[in-house]
Image (cartoon, rainbow, N blue to C red; front, side, top):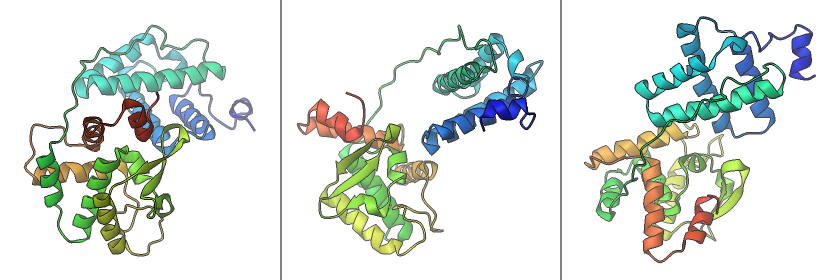
Amino acid sequence: MAIGQLVRLGWLTDPAHDLNAAIECFLTYCQAKNLSPNTVQYYAYRLGSFRRYVEEHASSSATSEITRQVIRDFVTAEIENCSPSTANHSVTTLRAFFGFLVREGYLVESPMVGVEKVRQKRTLINTFATEQIEAILASCGKDFVGVRDKAVILMLFDTGLRVSELCGLTLADVSWTDQQLLVLGKGNVERRVGFGQAARQALAQYTARRGELETDAVFVTCCGEPLNRHRAAEIVKKRCKMAGIAGLRCSPHTLRHTFAVTYLRDGGDLFSLQKILGTAI
């Protein structure tokens, strides 16, 4: 039975009058469209921030009474409390959210009409120098955590994977003979990405220590649970700090960018790079 029918029958709260119900309907719709779990989770996170703002600052939390000015005030608060980038992510999320409500007939018009994205300064993403990569890897010890962290960092640096793609790898996605990974990227598009000998050795040492677990995720925590992108980002940040690297954005994305720049400097072409990275041409 469709969501609209359930609302008309009184089994669900009307999303036009209840923001929480509207958010739940939207997230259910996103899951039904088979959007990636990361996308749905991020929509939920950003809409949660918006809901809290509305409850604390708006005169009404009814979805139909949320005005363009309320949204602009929220975006301004996001700029001040977080960053312009975060504010723009919120704008994108709210456009999708209110667009859904209009298409489903819960709202006549989206309050996002006339709300524009925030201007952002284009910043140059720095890259790690060779000696910095070596220092990061040298900070990883011989225990399970150290062996795992070394494999995580080398795989990110050697393949240019997004951190979410790395965390989504399963044991079946690793082809040892071809030294390739079957990667599920954005839009659920699969691609194959090769990895070098150093990364192969680090991954082999790690998987030997990983042992047999219930999960088939390649990278796991000390408790045997799949590694998520937030924990992977913490690993990179921690190892950079241990290596004494300062004044640089220490993140998985910096490793991805370092891979891209290194690939081009070594004679690779832009089109093949885009294919490896899983970006549009």
